[in-house]
Image (cartoon, rainbow, N blue to C red; front, top):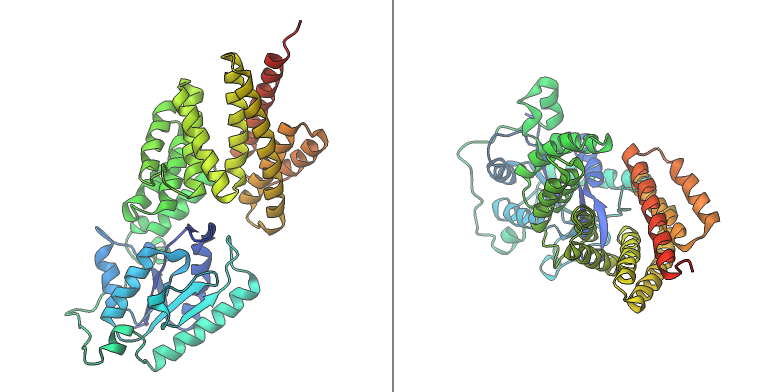
Amino acid sequence: MTKQCFVVQGFGKKTDYTDGRVLDLNASYEIIKMAVESAGLQCVRADEIVHAGTIDVPMYERLLNADVVIADLSTYNVNAAFELGVRYALKPYTTIVLAEEGFKNPFDLSHIVIRRYKHLGEEIGFREAQKMMAELKAAIQTIAGKPQTDSPVYTYLPQLQPPVATAVVTPAAPAAAAADGGGDSAAGSAKAMLDAAMQKMAASDFVAAKFFWEEVRKVRPADSFVLQQLALATYKSKQPSVVEALHAAQEILRELSPDSSNNPETLGLWGAVHKRLWEECGHPECLAESISAYERGFFLKQDHYNGINLAFLLNLRAVQMLKSGNADEAVADFILAQRIRKQVIRYADKLLDCTEDANKKYWVLASLYEAALGLGDSQAVADWDGKCRAMNVAEWMQDTRVQQADKLQALLSEYAGLRNPAV
């Protein structure tokens, strides 16, 4: 029977809260899987397991019985660290620990060998991928061929005897095999559902995407990436109504503690939901909550998306202040909005050359476009608009940018009219 390798790792995009970087762990897994398979082992990650009921049983079975376990601790994933500890307690040998190069080794892991690789955020560079795959393949072949104790539990307690299960686990078919008819329905695989959800999101089919994200959530109920994407698909679906969809998204995001979160994606979504609620209902507390979320998201990480939305809402509040007769506060908000746009340009401009993902790059360009529009730089507006239109992205993304530009122009015109009424 083919030897089994179980990969302990988060999936999707995760934030490293020590420095604010967002890493796509699926990009890491692609390299790990290629290395494992080239070494002659079958590779599976928890989200690929096709199963009925709770994932806990097959996960613990693999932590005990897998011939090799690879644990990737990148982004300080608590689940991965816990599962690594379980593996160390159950098995004296054949465990490999990985982490991207920015990972700072905690004290209790200082005596454990951690193999490093370089992550670019969205992907692993070609040369780094080749290097990582070659080194990992060699390590797998070495430890699988001649196991030596690598668990600190059995190193420091050599008299300890590892447990033996009464029955050996039957290997689960990875999602791809199941989809091809080689196993049960791929409906049980979180990875299959996640891939389907991402495809539906790209096609702007948010109703279908919401269904798939809900299925992934059943397997990974506390995963921040899944909850963020589910909230996005929920409010974009506008079902059963715009306001009901926004309130549903609001409840999903509450699970990520937006009041205390330092995750710019969570804060950006919380701000977006309350911005749309304000547009629908006109409640002042919704506008205030949106400004607060975007403000924290921008100043915590200099995030251009949060910044450009914060500038817009400051202009919006400035208009509200003028209408209520508070001219000083209106001028203060207007000036602050302009300063934030200048900061957005400085931060976003640096991202253009290092952003490979088309969707990410589009939103950087869209922020630069809107910042130029708000500052009244017509030449820059034309340049950034052309670059945005040249991007091959989902139609809803282009529509969102254009609609937002129309709103900003109307807002600035209204502000100017209130400040300088016709005599």
